[in-house]
View 1 (cartoon, helix red, strand yellow):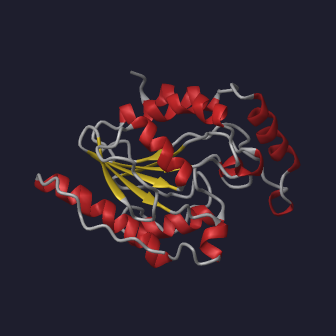
View 2 (cartoon, helix red, strand yellow; view 1 turned 30 degrees about the horizontal axis):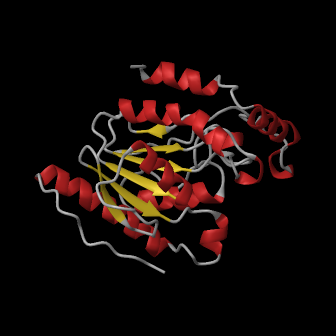
Length: 237
Protein backbone atom coordinates (compact mmCIF):
# COMPACT_ATOMS: atom_id res chain seq x y z
CA UNK A 1 0.00 0.00 0.00
CA UNK A 2 1.25 3.49 -0.84
CA UNK A 3 1.98 6.07 1.82
CA UNK A 4 0.35 9.50 1.75
CA UNK A 5 3.33 11.24 0.16
CA UNK A 6 3.56 8.74 -2.71
CA UNK A 7 -0.18 8.83 -3.34
CA UNK A 8 -0.27 12.62 -3.42
CA UNK A 9 2.65 12.68 -5.85
CA UNK A 10 0.87 10.19 -8.12
CA UNK A 11 -2.33 12.26 -8.09
CA UNK A 12 -0.62 15.57 -8.84
CA UNK A 13 1.37 14.12 -11.76
CA UNK A 14 -1.59 12.34 -13.39
CA UNK A 15 -2.22 13.15 -17.07
CA UNK A 16 -4.53 10.23 -17.89
CA UNK A 17 -7.52 12.20 -19.27
CA UNK A 18 -6.65 14.46 -22.25
CA UNK A 19 -9.86 16.51 -22.06
CA UNK A 20 -9.27 17.36 -18.40
CA UNK A 21 -5.57 18.06 -18.87
CA UNK A 22 -6.42 20.53 -21.64
CA UNK A 23 -9.23 22.22 -19.71
CA UNK A 24 -7.45 22.61 -16.38
CA UNK A 25 -4.46 24.12 -18.22
CA UNK A 26 -6.62 26.49 -20.24
CA UNK A 27 -8.36 27.77 -17.12
CA UNK A 28 -5.01 28.25 -15.39
CA UNK A 29 -3.71 30.29 -18.31
CA UNK A 30 -6.79 32.39 -19.04
CA UNK A 31 -7.76 32.95 -15.38
CA UNK A 32 -10.71 34.87 -14.02
CA UNK A 33 -10.25 38.63 -13.91
CA UNK A 34 -10.51 38.72 -10.11
CA UNK A 35 -7.54 36.33 -9.87
CA UNK A 36 -5.44 37.51 -12.81
CA UNK A 37 -2.45 38.28 -10.55
CA UNK A 38 -2.48 34.79 -9.01
CA UNK A 39 -0.65 31.69 -10.18
CA UNK A 40 -3.23 28.94 -10.67
CA UNK A 41 -2.53 25.41 -9.46
CA UNK A 42 -3.79 23.96 -12.76
CA UNK A 43 -3.10 20.31 -11.84
CA UNK A 44 -4.98 17.40 -10.26
CA UNK A 45 -5.97 18.08 -6.65
CA UNK A 46 -5.31 15.70 -3.76
CA UNK A 47 -7.54 15.08 -0.80
CA UNK A 48 -6.71 16.78 2.48
CA UNK A 49 -7.53 16.63 6.15
CA UNK A 50 -6.86 14.47 9.18
CA UNK A 51 -4.87 11.36 8.13
CA UNK A 52 -6.40 9.54 11.10
CA UNK A 53 -9.95 10.60 10.23
CA UNK A 54 -12.89 8.31 10.80
CA UNK A 55 -14.97 10.27 8.28
CA UNK A 56 -14.37 10.98 4.60
CA UNK A 57 -16.27 13.71 2.76
CA UNK A 58 -16.57 13.07 -0.98
CA UNK A 59 -17.35 15.89 -3.40
CA UNK A 60 -17.60 15.92 -7.19
CA UNK A 61 -14.52 17.65 -8.63
CA UNK A 62 -12.31 20.73 -8.20
CA UNK A 63 -13.97 23.98 -9.21
CA UNK A 64 -12.28 25.72 -12.15
CA UNK A 65 -11.50 28.89 -10.18
CA UNK A 66 -11.63 27.28 -6.74
CA UNK A 67 -9.49 24.20 -6.13
CA UNK A 68 -8.01 24.37 -9.65
CA UNK A 69 -6.69 27.80 -8.63
CA UNK A 70 -5.75 27.17 -5.01
CA UNK A 71 -4.67 23.52 -5.18
CA UNK A 72 -6.86 22.35 -2.28
CA UNK A 73 -10.30 20.77 -2.38
CA UNK A 74 -13.22 23.06 -1.48
CA UNK A 75 -10.94 26.07 -1.18
CA UNK A 76 -11.35 29.49 -2.72
CA UNK A 77 -14.97 29.34 -3.84
CA UNK A 78 -18.50 29.58 -2.42
CA UNK A 79 -18.88 25.82 -2.00
CA UNK A 80 -15.72 25.72 0.09
CA UNK A 81 -16.93 28.66 2.18
CA UNK A 82 -20.24 26.92 2.87
CA UNK A 83 -18.60 23.58 3.72
CA UNK A 84 -15.84 24.99 5.90
CA UNK A 85 -18.26 27.14 7.89
CA UNK A 86 -20.42 24.08 8.58
CA UNK A 87 -17.43 21.96 9.63
CA UNK A 88 -16.33 24.75 11.95
CA UNK A 89 -19.78 24.93 13.54
CA UNK A 90 -19.60 21.16 14.03
CA UNK A 91 -16.18 21.40 15.70
CA UNK A 92 -14.37 19.59 12.88
CA UNK A 93 -12.48 22.59 11.45
CA UNK A 94 -10.31 25.04 13.36
CA UNK A 95 -11.59 28.03 11.37
CA UNK A 96 -14.73 28.92 9.36
CA UNK A 97 -12.97 29.86 6.11
CA UNK A 98 -11.04 28.02 3.41
CA UNK A 99 -9.31 30.51 1.14
CA UNK A 100 -5.89 29.14 0.11
CA UNK A 101 -3.50 26.26 0.76
CA UNK A 102 -1.54 28.09 3.46
CA UNK A 103 -4.43 29.66 5.36
CA UNK A 104 -3.90 27.49 8.45
CA UNK A 105 -7.03 25.36 8.04
CA UNK A 106 -6.90 21.99 9.80
CA UNK A 107 -9.61 19.36 10.09
CA UNK A 108 -10.36 17.07 13.03
CA UNK A 109 -11.56 13.51 12.34
CA UNK A 110 -12.47 14.44 8.76
CA UNK A 111 -10.80 14.05 5.37
CA UNK A 112 -12.06 15.78 2.20
CA UNK A 113 -11.77 14.16 -1.22
CA UNK A 114 -13.60 14.00 -4.54
CA UNK A 115 -14.75 11.67 -7.29
CA UNK A 116 -12.72 13.49 -9.95
CA UNK A 117 -9.36 15.23 -9.31
CA UNK A 118 -9.26 17.69 -12.23
CA UNK A 119 -11.62 20.57 -12.92
CA UNK A 120 -13.97 19.42 -15.72
CA UNK A 121 -15.64 21.61 -18.36
CA UNK A 122 -19.08 22.75 -17.15
CA UNK A 123 -18.32 20.95 -13.88
CA UNK A 124 -19.36 17.68 -15.55
CA UNK A 125 -16.74 14.91 -15.60
CA UNK A 126 -17.34 12.06 -18.02
CA UNK A 127 -17.95 8.52 -16.69
CA UNK A 128 -14.60 7.42 -18.12
CA UNK A 129 -12.85 10.29 -16.32
CA UNK A 130 -14.46 9.42 -13.01
CA UNK A 131 -13.51 5.78 -13.50
CA UNK A 132 -9.89 6.80 -14.15
CA UNK A 133 -9.84 8.69 -10.84
CA UNK A 134 -11.50 5.98 -8.77
CA UNK A 135 -8.24 4.23 -7.82
CA UNK A 136 -7.03 7.43 -6.14
CA UNK A 137 -10.13 7.49 -3.94
CA UNK A 138 -9.73 3.79 -3.19
CA UNK A 139 -6.13 4.36 -2.11
CA UNK A 140 -7.09 7.25 0.17
CA UNK A 141 -9.75 5.08 1.77
CA UNK A 142 -7.22 2.29 2.28
CA UNK A 143 -4.94 4.73 4.12
CA UNK A 144 -7.80 5.90 6.34
CA UNK A 145 -7.66 2.74 8.41
CA UNK A 146 -10.17 3.97 11.01
CA UNK A 147 -12.80 5.05 8.47
CA UNK A 148 -16.37 4.60 9.67
CA UNK A 149 -18.51 7.28 8.00
CA UNK A 150 -18.71 8.34 4.34
CA UNK A 151 -20.47 11.65 3.63
CA UNK A 152 -21.42 12.02 -0.04
CA UNK A 153 -21.97 15.57 -1.28
CA UNK A 154 -24.36 15.17 -4.18
CA UNK A 155 -25.79 12.27 -6.16
CA UNK A 156 -22.64 11.54 -8.17
CA UNK A 157 -20.57 11.22 -5.00
CA UNK A 158 -23.34 9.07 -3.48
CA UNK A 159 -23.22 6.69 -6.44
CA UNK A 160 -19.42 6.60 -6.31
CA UNK A 161 -19.51 5.67 -2.62
CA UNK A 162 -21.87 2.79 -3.37
CA UNK A 163 -19.48 1.50 -6.02
CA UNK A 164 -16.74 1.38 -3.40
CA UNK A 165 -18.82 0.15 -0.45
CA UNK A 166 -21.73 -2.24 -1.08
CA UNK A 167 -24.80 -1.21 0.88
CA UNK A 168 -26.43 -3.63 3.30
CA UNK A 169 -29.92 -2.43 2.38
CA UNK A 170 -31.64 -2.91 -0.95
CA UNK A 171 -31.65 -0.05 -3.48
CA UNK A 172 -30.36 2.89 -1.41
CA UNK A 173 -32.02 6.10 -2.60
CA UNK A 174 -30.31 9.48 -2.60
CA UNK A 175 -32.01 12.01 -0.31
CA UNK A 176 -30.63 14.70 1.93
CA UNK A 177 -29.49 13.17 5.28
CA UNK A 178 -30.47 9.66 4.15
CA UNK A 179 -28.25 7.19 6.01
CA UNK A 180 -27.39 3.62 5.05
CA UNK A 181 -25.22 0.88 6.56
CA UNK A 182 -22.34 -0.21 4.35
CA UNK A 183 -20.25 -3.34 4.21
CA UNK A 184 -17.42 -3.43 6.72
CA UNK A 185 -19.36 -1.72 9.49
CA UNK A 186 -19.33 1.69 7.84
CA UNK A 187 -22.14 4.17 7.19
CA UNK A 188 -23.09 6.36 4.23
CA UNK A 189 -24.69 9.76 4.80
CA UNK A 190 -26.08 11.63 1.80
CA UNK A 191 -26.18 15.40 1.41
CA UNK A 192 -27.07 17.90 -1.24
CA UNK A 193 -23.91 19.39 -2.70
CA UNK A 194 -23.07 22.86 -1.33
CA UNK A 195 -22.97 24.33 -4.83
CA UNK A 196 -23.84 27.97 -5.39
CA UNK A 197 -27.00 26.88 -7.18
CA UNK A 198 -28.18 24.85 -4.19
CA UNK A 199 -27.20 27.31 -1.47
CA UNK A 200 -28.44 30.48 -3.18
CA UNK A 201 -31.82 28.97 -4.08
CA UNK A 202 -32.41 27.64 -0.57
CA UNK A 203 -32.36 24.01 -1.64
CA UNK A 204 -29.55 23.61 0.91
CA UNK A 205 -29.58 25.93 3.92
CA UNK A 206 -27.00 26.14 6.72
CA UNK A 207 -29.46 24.45 9.10
CA UNK A 208 -30.00 21.59 6.66
CA UNK A 209 -26.26 21.18 6.19
CA UNK A 210 -25.70 21.16 9.94
CA UNK A 211 -27.99 18.12 10.19
CA UNK A 212 -25.55 16.16 7.98
CA UNK A 213 -22.65 16.70 10.38
CA UNK A 214 -24.79 16.04 13.43
CA UNK A 215 -25.84 12.77 11.83
CA UNK A 216 -22.23 11.85 11.04
CA UNK A 217 -21.11 12.68 14.57
CA UNK A 218 -23.91 10.59 16.07
CA UNK A 219 -22.71 7.64 14.02
CA UNK A 220 -19.13 8.13 15.17
CA UNK A 221 -20.30 8.43 18.76
CA UNK A 222 -22.24 5.17 18.43
CA UNK A 223 -19.13 3.53 17.04
CA UNK A 224 -17.15 4.67 20.07
CA UNK A 225 -19.85 3.32 22.38
CA UNK A 226 -19.98 -0.03 20.57
CA UNK A 227 -23.55 0.41 19.28
CA UNK A 228 -24.54 -0.25 15.66
CA UNK A 229 -28.25 0.53 15.32
CA UNK A 230 -29.38 2.89 12.58
CA UNK A 231 -30.00 6.39 13.97
CA UNK A 232 -33.13 8.35 13.27
CA UNK A 233 -32.86 9.84 9.80
CA UNK A 234 -34.20 13.30 9.05
CA UNK A 235 -35.13 14.16 5.47
CA UNK A 236 -35.46 17.79 4.39
CA UNK A 237 -37.28 18.86 1.25
